[in-house]
Image (cartoon, rainbow, N blue to C red):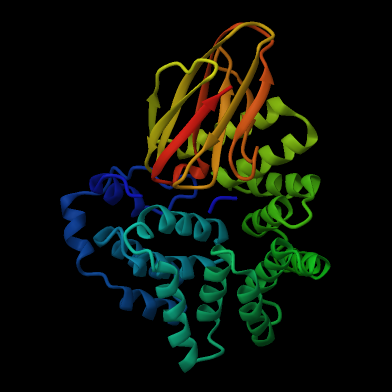
Length: 369
């Protein structure tokens, strides 16, 4: 699972929104008049709203803060916390994707800043639920599962029936692999506490996709529940694709990966054809997908491998000459996408490839054997 900056105008138009579907969805309603209003909002006011339990208002305040300073830490940190308190876990994940895409390249110490802020708050109020929630989620997002579990243990001690606490302790345990049985029990408890939440089911699906011992059928069932509940998001489709790949259904996996790419792509760059035995490099920024023509004969094996020195997670789909997705790849070698596939018919296929969720900036290398 993947967890660098596009042009400033695109950033401002993009990341002020909080939609579930894309990191780089343009927001046409941003205007000069709106920009004037942005200056009146502050992260301090947003935090006061969280402390007062006014989470929807806090989201609006922090969205305004993000619009005023699209690469700063504070707006995202606060909006994520408010989203978590509302049980909007998918939105919180998407906002941390935005942090990776737009904030970390400007502020490489973003993780340390976020955790230090929570440490300061918890030093004053050790049992504060929003701070325990936000700190544990930061650890979870940045793959520090033991630290996340430690904070979540405290959160659950304070509030045993907390849906978030049980859900993310279960996820952290399953992803870390140290206590999978206990993690599975936590996940089941979270579902029992919030049986109709598509966001909870999405986190369960994520755990059973990327955890220490994957369970493709369980991941598929939970991701389907999340999708049917309204989470038509890139990560849900990546989870479904992973399940289909585990089931051996290449065509269904390709459809899901194409949907993932459709949701994250704001710029499709058509490259020159890639011949057998050659490679090409491409500059990626958030939202950019590369389309590469691949000419093959019937029965020829298409062997492709992606790599990068700048990021570590790619995703691709191969489209038939008629545009039908025929094969896709997420984690072919490590987290890098690739494929070995025999073309049933000759013609010019089209490879679409980008970083996972199209959030990275750097150089992508695509090699064809």
